[in-house]
Length: 435
Image (cartoon, rainbow, N blue to C red; front, side, top):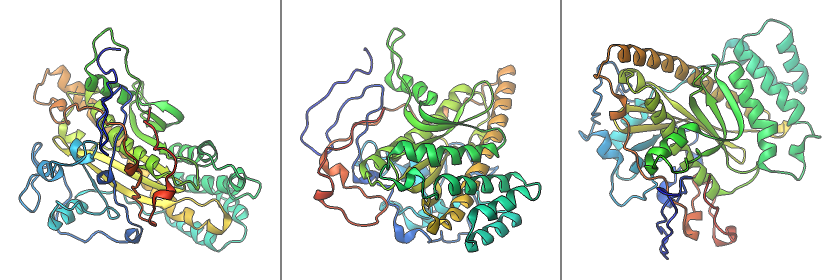
């Protein structure tokens, strides 16, 4: 195939460079580690007096931080970063559980941490009361059924009771496959993650969840741009993911993605890192592809739009969002992390999970609303032949796709920092490229 044929180059260095096929092979090193530390899980972001960014008066093309440096310069330093590092893609990761990159000044970091308007909604009083009962009950099924069927319930209570009933019947049940020797990814997806996310989207404003191994259309469209293919070349498939969130209209635009990095109770850290890189590449592609579709929309609307990434490794879940608050600078933020339980003794862990999942639900709903606003502005500007709003000038340049991982040392990346690893932990060969 012309255009993006693989052209392998031999190198003995840890960061050997390999040219790309259209399936976005990936390379990474320790610099790509999101550095989520377990001892920071409960740490709060320092309170700052800065306003959220952007606001109505924010400029489109420049965002000055407290140091006086523009955001794009802060993101992209230093020059010797690995080519698949998010900073090289114009992406900065923030959140209370993310360690600061060493080149970012503390005052800039504190400001960035408080610049994002996180979806942070409390559970209703009825749900809070149910949660208190659940934490003390010896009969989860009886308690949930009583709450679900005694009165008319709202969407939030519906989601909470559906999830608790599902876990009671299919996860906590001693006869469940979760308590067998099978600990594969298919089991994790079919009996836990996909049902839970389906219950979640059932209570949204028509967000569609598509489970299973699928190809992202947005990724395929962006690969066409990155590979600069000729008309007679084979067209690339999109990035393969384990699920995606869609808008309910005819376009069925993708607004989020899901990755399962192996089965539950597994610790394939290289695969986790690979899928994390897929996550920020994928979220970036989702935003860029919406620009491709609605290029004449107003940027003041688009900069409020967010894409989403649900990522589970073992039983540890991270939920990320991404937006484009200023031209060519993407902001990826961790809205929450939690652990899913598989035994009755740990059912209290579902409480924290449900709070964070509710924030994801509200985030997905907000994305749909802003997407509708963007469509209207696109249609209006198209009819008026307005050239004042050309969104593609605001997104990052089409870059080469990520590189294939190389070198055994690339496996010594433990972003969760739970314990130290040594060579004996990784006797098998490194994980291969993703599709």
